[in-house]
Image (cartoon, rainbow, N blue to C red):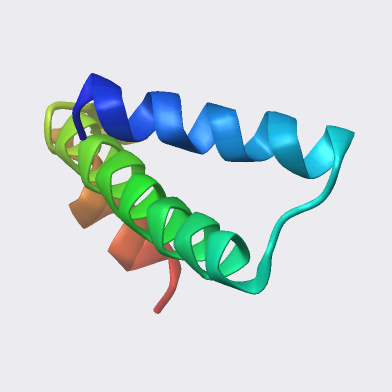
Length: 72
């Protein structure tokens, strides 16, 4: 996500609060939010790839592996 996209998101949010958005602007805002959230989720997932959990028995396992065991 580049600075122009973030600036546009902020611009639309400010306009929405002050005067409202047109249908086209609302659609654009929704698309920009989808892209933004997808990027944030991707970054978070990459962060979790670098996190480890120490099990009760002393083993250290990747977070995603430890988390998937709890769901079973």
